[in-house]
Amino acid sequence: MDTNETCGEMKGNQPQEEHRWLQQILGDWSFKGEAVMEPGKPDERFEGTESVRALGELWTVAEGQGEMCGGMAKTVMTLGFNPQSRRFVGTFVASMMAHLWVYSGELLGNTLTLDTEGPDHTGRMVKFRDVIEVQSPDHRTLSSYMLGEDGEWRKIMEAIYLRRT
Figure (cartoon, one colour):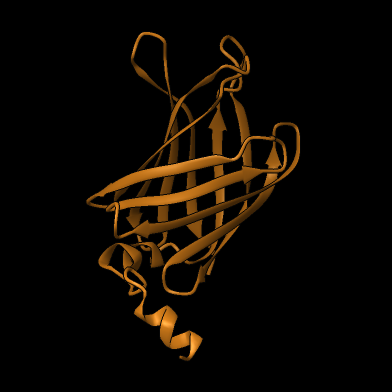
């Protein structure tokens, strides 16, 4: 049997509506934002560029670079949709951190909420939430939240993305 035929027959390999939703963020973007690095310290401003490309019809790969955390940083985010679990899935890595962030999320309207877990500024593992909101074809935001010990979500980062091309 032809391997392409075998792969095509695998359940879940056909793009779903959720995969098509991700396609709208393909392209080249500029971003600016602010982040709370540690409680009691001033917010850090950052800016850079991001290029989002398709990996077939099922995945997006976003590669970013810019001035972050007092130096140049690079980031890679993958996003897809798992039809079996009915959840968006993905990963995030950055050149200035050793943690692999693993996402599981859901879409409501034009807002994709991605839950993950990672180290806070002390190294303690806590719950985080990244929220991507598509404002228009040329404007989106990314906000990050951390779950506090009091059970409240606190915004720790917000970035505004504007399409370059």
